[in-house]
Amino acid sequence: MAVFESPKPRINYSMLSQYISRPICFVGRVEKVHPTGKSFTLSDGEGKSASVELNEPLDEELSGVVEVVGVVSNKGAIMASAYNMLREDQGIPFDLELYNEALKVIHEYPQHYPFELSTSG
Image (cartoon, rainbow, N blue to C red):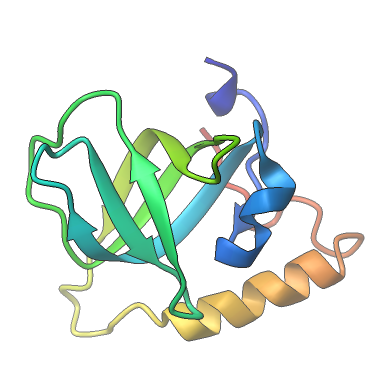
């Protein structure tokens, strides 16, 4: 699938509408998981919630900070191609607020950060 072949900009909730039908990477903290396991909600570094939809139900318990690679639907949901829980077991919590500040800088000065924070697939 093309999602894994191209650079994926890292975005937060406020940037979703700019990336409709495009591959992205979204990092957020799990807020709630739908009982069917086919969708979940992530809150970004500003506390705003994005909906993530899966093709297959989850086969594991999802919690903490999760990185999702997918495409933004025309409704603003993230259609996930892959997800990865970011382990916080080293006693160092992932700082979503600081991550969000980095995103703002990267998007404000794209000429200096063309793909440094893009995921490689």
